Length: 358
Image 1: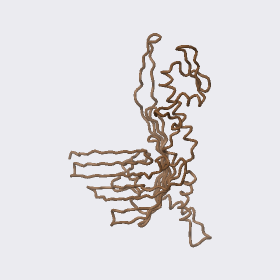
Image 2 (image 1 turned 135 degrees about the vertical axis):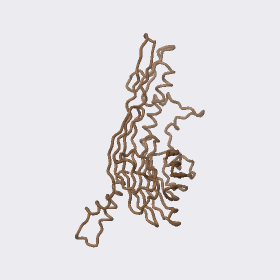
Image 3 (image 1 turned 135 degrees about the horizontal axis):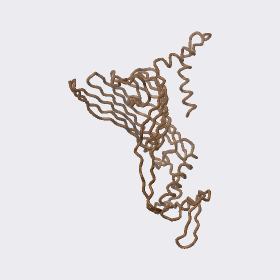
Image 4 (image 1 turned 90 degrees about the horizontal axis):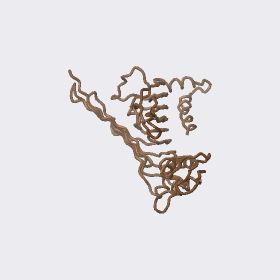
């Protein structure tokens, strides 16, 4: 995926580098033209997380243990060249990567031509760390759209690469439809490594699985039992602790290990989309959507269509940005996006009102 993204990033340079005078290379001019008006940014922000928790115990006299949660932070780095829509205000003097730019997810930008975004951020929230990255390069024309995108959302646990080539038909200046081919690469979503361990009653034979993974069980008489991890360390001395604490970790590690053995899966299909954009200073509406109704069965053992009983399925995503000012004082806004790919969902929204006392 990284090689494809690098190659696609170089395509504009190769395109712009073509000239009627082959003896006069203009690569430097091409680079300058490609990055003109783009913004490189990097920033780190942070703050305190949830408060520490005191845990008391009386098993060996009164004792107190404080469970501390490390501070939250976000570190972002990126470069972007995306024309702002009319409803997007650049209130900050500097761009730090934490801004919510709803229009970035739209298939079509405000202007035709090349636009791109390459961004990565590392975050920690309430003691849990996530890595997110979003990269895309698109070329929009009055009659066609070409786009390549890579998304990894650590919070939503979704990761995929997508390329699409679409025909675009405009109905006036505000509304357009598009349709074409799409190629997606993703982890083997739908694959369940635990299925081979599932019993006829639907439960998992978890102890046999753990033993197969190197765990062991020692019976030393009635009521005396030890559960040992692959290194020989005792991890539980009762069935209750084994089932409540150790087994969930065993299953999680097993699923991650087996899933990582599967190569990324290709999905070739059809994509249909629309885009609508209207803006005035008192009323604006931006809506877009994409549907993936048809998928090619390429015979891969771990493709999603195999886990869907060989049947077609519908993936879709879209967004909406709406704002209306009733008068000089009162205004209402609603913004959001929703995606469902391979039966995995991620979304965000914001809704509210402003009232200015004059």
